[in-house]
Length: 451
Image (cartoon, rainbow, N blue to C red):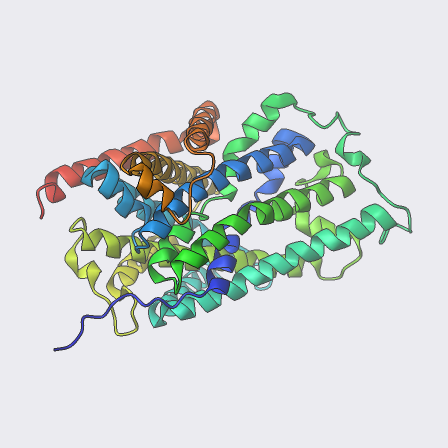
């Protein structure tokens, strides 16, 4: 009798460590950081550090459950097990929607970035090419996906490390500035460290949290990790200090060299940085890096949507054909279904307006906040279901339980209130709940009584 194909455990330590880091270092840092700096000034460093600390609490909560039960559906499966079928259904479909929307934004961005080198080419063509290549990578085998993501992440990381090292050369030794050390005075010389007050820091939080979207993907890799008990904790525990190094370190260097009120007025802060030290083709280099960041995000999104549809189908909360696994050990039908929906993103390149990108990112942030909140609530419920003896046997535990998860939930509530306050992000609190309501109706009408 032929054995039924199963998901391959083909992801190694280096894949998951780099994927977790790559997920947290996206276009939000390379391009989105300029908008955040305008709102908070140098105090944006506090916002990124605070956001990073909250994300660490969320990831430790997810890690506790993922090490205990490493499955492909991750937080959707845990929500079903500890909060009920409806919570698992909404969380799974919401996460699928989140990545579909984000991938649409990313493949649109690919078309924009390629315009630098091929100004007369149609954007939709590059978006379509990016989608086809990423789908093919995901269909081969999970190890192929892991390899692509490893190298994509490495490019981003090397770019940031280079920028920090070269920037410190300008700050401490005056390299590219006639030998005159710039120092750190720009951090407080233009209206102080808090030029827009503490409210500027609060205003920047929705943008800051969007930058961390995707980090929860570590949980989804648990079902295909070679040694989840060892790999998942290591990936999560290294994320916080690396985020602090890359986000806080990079922005500290940029704002020390350039007055904060000049950053963002002439493109990406990273292009400014490389220009400063006289590096030719700075715009081209950073364009290549942000291109890989967009491709990486799209690659991760196709991976995540495929696994989430597979998990939902296994739980009889999506059409059962999505539960099929190819000979290569990947949920091929689920991946193709997500890719088909993403073709809408390619079509949008014909008539996408600038405003749509802001809407897309804010809707993604709403989806991410829902997911993060569910992770925290599920972990609290999971821990309460255990006896003292079972708690002592947990191989990996949530951080500062139960205070940490409750503080993180309070912080996420604050971000939602702030999103409601600003017109540009308010759209997310209209579209997001409408989508949740649609999924709720879909559950009640189609899936509630399926066994």
